[in-house]
Image 1 (cartoon, rainbow, N blue to C red):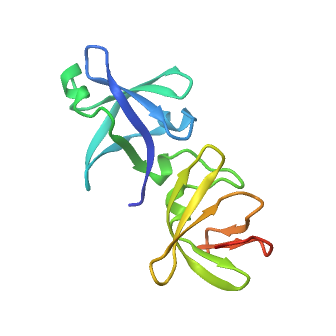
Image 2 (image 1 turned 90 degrees about the vertical axis):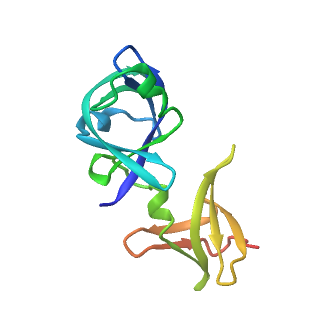
Length: 167
């Protein structure tokens, strides 16, 4: 089962172990369809059934999980990532991508393979693809319309603009 990060647990909320969760997508509607979630703990994750959910404000929801019943229980998960099955993740629209999907792609420039995306991160100006070439050398490529042409998730390929200058 493929999982995607959906939120970050900010803190415990209330007296019954509810969790205050910040949505990573900024959207919260998809949280109300969730039946189970996984809290990432190092390389492992813990599975929980969703007992209840309510909207707090903006990109924050209050989540009640089975087995987390006190504020102390909830505080143990502060700062942890909340992962869900793809079916419960926020839907992506045209020209939107999950980082995990981008990290399966090969980057191609002028019919030449540059390397594979190993991570994506944000700067103040744009998202950046971190690409490892065949020798393991890391190249950073701005994920902008001026540099990136076509993104084909089905074929796991990202094509850069012909004019793009890549070091």
